[in-house]
Length: 115
Length: 117
Image 1 (cartoon, rainbow over the protein chains, first blue to last red):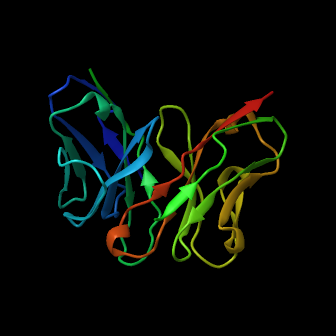
Image 2 (tube, each protein chain N blue to C red):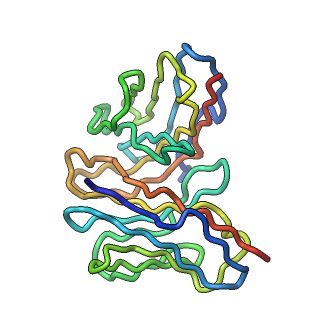
Image 3 (cartoon, each protein chain N blue to C red):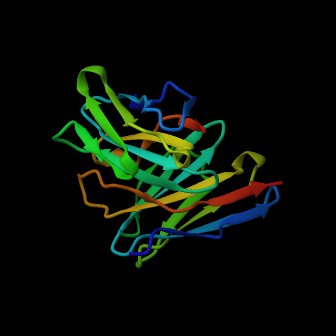
């Protein structure tokens, strides 16, 4: 099976712009989670989608949003970019079985740099 | 609050030496626990996981981890380290509570492993 893919791998934006990142999960996986990784804050959970519905959300401002499509692919959007949004954004997919902890498999990440 | 702690930010070992990376957790109930490894600029690769049952779990690349409920620990071990093991290692937990835990792993701060020849 192909692994989790993320596009683009690298992005450079300027403050105030918006950005959309894409994630394609492992075939058959219905849950996609997003994380932000920075040197100062480490790995922080952004949100999780399952069957096109957001089931869980971390403690991030409303500028961070996401969605999931019927084929389980997911996108996350960051509006009005700030310098502090520079980070590695990781997505992870899992089967998404309810009430059972799934194993999350991670993509290579998208490195976002905000200038 | 649920948390995962990795007390060691940086560990240096010689190639061929044994390795133990520490991980402590704080959860209301027994969480599901994971160890991931990250090479520079890359995503996270799953090394092993603990859901229930045998408290000694085997993973890939010769790694193992032992779940100790009495110590709230899930330490990662390897008997003989190879230079290619140099990377950052993350311990993570999932509360298995459904609801607000869906899809959410809580990560430790990571331990950077340096391997000397």
